[in-house]
Image (tube, rainbow, N blue to C red):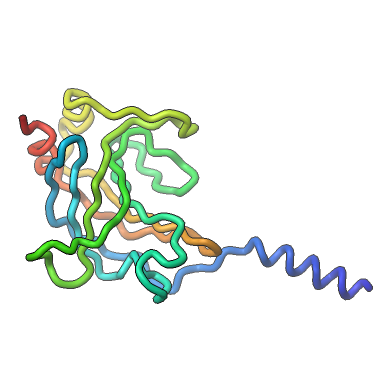
Length: 172
């Protein structure tokens, strides 16, 4: 009886354990950014297929795959933490003609302010974006992938040139 209790307890404890990924953090390379109405299309490349980290097919087993860029000094990309001023969006494969070979991705990013408890969000105005980014040369971005039964996957930091982003923000 004691053995069964021990085995049941061990199963319960281990079922909460999250596995590590087999892949090292991806190295991301910035390609371009362009405005598409109120969204910003960020294109980038990776040395790791971040949409198929488990070798089961694109997005299979994933809970989410996002690109996050920190616009202000708050640069904690942890899953449980909200970045107050950020650009973020889902990762999609870049399937356009002329896309670079390898793992090419794009993200249709929103630029917004998020409350610390994530209960509210609002889009930033052109003036607010200009003010946040004034004096900056680049902003850090990371791919964050969550999957059932696994610890969150974080890429290495990609730096997005502020001059490119502001060119698109300030287009008429």
